[in-house]
Image 1 (cartoon, rainbow, N blue to C red):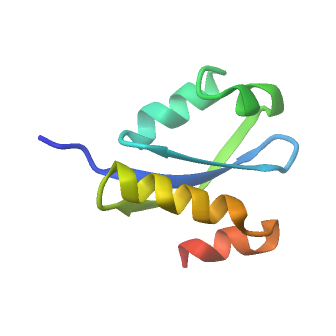
Image 2 (cartoon, rainbow, N blue to C red):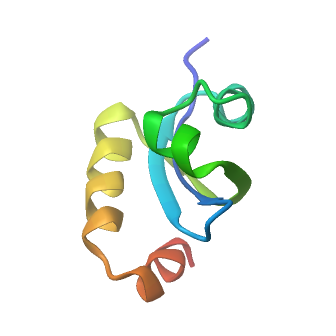
Length: 81
């Protein structure tokens, strides 16, 4: 069975946002929480998942991630609405 790809945004302990893609949200959040998800989140500290959206495939997820990362902070969460 093919896994569903997602784009997500999480909040770090310092209030900053991190945007990423995954095909297993629970495993990825566990990796971030234990300091094994990304260098950025490891340094800043994982706080919580804010939003996630399913995507057609990995390519779509990566394009969405790029689009979100270009937005100013105050518009990032609105992208998911």
